Length: 396
Image 1 (spheres, rainbow, N blue to C red):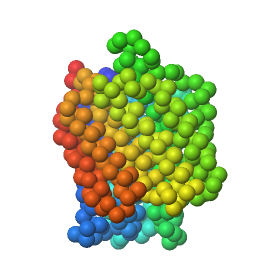
Image 2 (cartoon, rainbow, N blue to C red):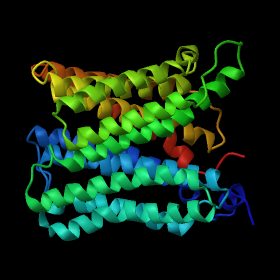
Image 3 (cartoon, rainbow, N blue to C red):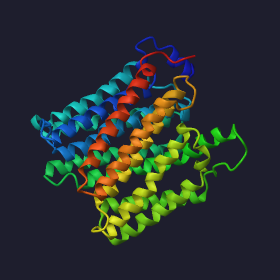
């Protein structure tokens, strides 16, 4: 049987279909920048989004199940062959999967004229296909321990299904179970996968340099922290304003902060490609602390600022960190961040901090403008830097 590398090299079609991360990372980045510009224009009254959802609901839905789902697909399609030793999904099956994602984005955007059940089917198709394809590979490769990662992707799909059920019943979507389940699934994915890749990548980078403290390995503490994280998120999804949820969220925030401190991130400041992973994960405990505080003291801590610590902070920065690094490594490029890649991180960090600050200071509307501009510029630079890598064959 040919290896994954041989399978990729033997693909004679367009280079962008030669590896799973290529179409999905590029599609996610282009979509994220355009969607933000469209949303800002809609809020400014320049045009109307022809969606069945309101502007805020469309923005939240497409961040989770448009942008994030595409990044998750790119990551999983790249990681699963390494986990299982089986051939990667390339070529026409990959094109079919990407097309189902693009079809979902078109359907949601023009959903004002679609029957709700048809809309739900078109939108849910992508993640259902992804889970089916990856599940087959994981089972065939007998890689049982990574089924839990696929189950978390299934929870992301479930959140989207709940969102559509709430739409059918006429419930308030922006405050519904579906959105919270989608956010919770994303944060749990970051906690689990981030707990693998951040200390591993940091250790590999530090081991080639001066001796000193290295990240601590996965231990019982990590298992307990992930368990507490899952429990806090589950209760937040079910009862977001309860005192017990607030207490568990604060405890999970403290646990994840301690977990991050064990990974020696301060020693990686000279390499942005590594340090951005730690900066991104910092927004996970920050989000827990803010969301927990908002549950306990809603008049002092606005829920909008709390939620955006997770979305504009942890999810945005971690996805960009993963996309920039994985794209370099699997394109045969050196694993180091030049000034352009560092600019992506700085712009995204400005966007995240500005959006959180805007929630804490509702009267400072200029912060929203800074956040939106930083977001758009970050993805514009990403596309300018990485599109050439995605559109040409891998460097030998």
